[in-house]
Image 1 (tube, protein in one colour):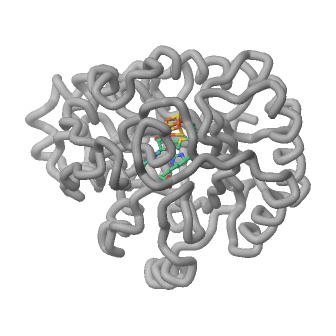
Image 2: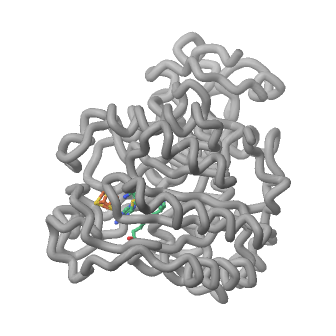
Length: 348
Ligand code: SAM
Ligand code: DTB
Ligand code: SF4
């Protein structure tokens, strides 16, 4: 086990890259991280932090492979929740109206195009507080169709009942995305219509149904470093680490309460990625929303810090993402290649 950073803080300064112990001890996957240990890692000198993150990354992953997913909003706008960052809440005037659930045929045509564009996973998102049972038939047909294209599937539909989670699993769903978004303390400033515990409950149901968990958060909502450390501590001490950890940089949407937020220090964003990599060594860490506003050097630092998944395609749910040609050029310059599904660790 890694020694507590508390016991060897002087050594850490003399021995960059190690928090104590030898590199082969970094192979351990731990769910017993203390908040203090995570804070110590977060606050390391930047070069030491990146060295350590890259060391851990190389134990578990090919450092030049990045998993590529494409995202589609299968049901846009009109959501009754009040998440302060979101373009799709009915509570904010963002110019995005409510539309109906897309047809299975249209979803599968978009999935086919995503596969042609190089995506190995197709992620579908709905602006719901929770799915209605009457929608589950269409949702399951979408999952079956995506699987028959030879792609992995991911859904994010809001809160689930036990039986809905089981239905998704039976349809062949690989991942369910449900984010905690931020620290427990800051959460109340961002969302009032459902609690952090509601989200944790859904995550438990997803895990118990045997689905891979995709759970992450957003950085840049005005939260403090303390909040980022708390959020990372929550992920790292879950009963098992989420198999996929999306770290989103807030996309500021006009009309939302967070539309005018100050931008985050890029180095703090990179630190968040690096700490996710170190504390959840086997998880795929996704450099998720926000790439449109990052330059190539910023993204390269995120990959160096251990991010190994992205969304490709020009649209996230309702906001833009870099053009495919720009991503292809960046990957060419960095020598990054797509990670195939069988290289992507999962529990199922
Ligand atoms: N309605 C479902 C839910 O909230 O779980 C699924 C869709 S919701 C849009 C999925 C996630 O996208 C949110 O939990 C949040 O982390 C992320 N997200 C939404 N809007 C964002 C924004 N403007 N910037 C960054 N991330 C955002
Ligand atoms: C996640 O953590 N990020 C994605 C996905 N899970 C569903 C969503 C990002 C949404 C960005 C804002 C938008 O496009 O509306
Ligand atoms: Fe609704 Fe999800 Fe947006 Fe929150 S994040 S308002 S639940 S679509």
